[in-house]
Image (cartoon, rainbow, N blue to C red; front, side, top):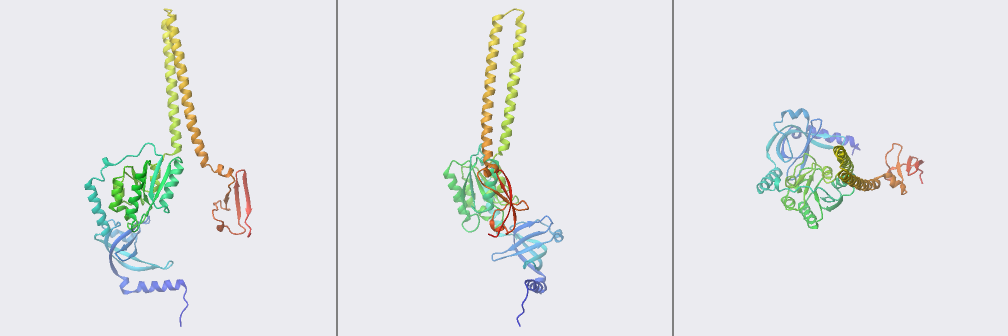
Length: 397
């Protein structure tokens, strides 16, 4: 008779079958490391893969003491261990007890070969790299329009300097045809012109996910670009050929956004410092002139040189007028700059949005409510208007 089993019973049964199998209890597997991660606990997580498939692996901290090398993506290794099932999710993995190298993996060999060849061509030479312009007004971005990278870049730039224009040239960042798509997007932005800097990148992933940025076509497009290029691929520990060829490397897309934008608050502080230094310099100059005139007046008084003294007094009056006029001009320029900054900051002020009739909706925990479907009937909500707050209860209608 057919038994009706619960999900837990099924997973437990499968776990028992796999973990008691004579072959799977003690096995040796050869493969290439992919998506390697070292957790804060000291455990190592990675995939072993070959041309056809991959298997999830874990090497617990206690077994890492026997390692004689630092594992990394692309390495070909031989591991020994057993199959285990994580019953809550029904996933099986290889619990690695020992690991040793078995030469370099195919992808790692390709990476090193291309890196060596391009280095001999001089494509990595620092003297051939372009610098960032002092003023950046327009930034081109080559990445996926739906990935996390473009959202991080836009968020950082608009927060730091809303005046910077961002032009996205969408592209595929992984899979078949990704390298040619990335190279073509770089060429299009260079042909477009009127762009100060280009960011090329994507979020993190395995070595296979990032491989398009290790292709020679992408390296060539970056090398021959006449616009400075920042490579922002993956995380800080990820390195690609694009990083070596680009004019600058950012460890993450967010850092790339910081590199092409100047914080508006820093700019305000810089202008305030310039104003203070200019005012102090003018004050010192005026004081010095007055002291010189007073000393001259004392020296000339004994000889009664009325005409000379009157001339010097006229010169002093002229200098005072010029200094005062200069101070007024500088103050007016600083006032206009600060007014512009205030106007740009007011655009980002939520109070302006509320004044236009919008309302902020929060739940009882103070969390923003963005989707009506997240609200249960009977829930208490706090509505924030421009002129005050209102608490409401959601009805079933």
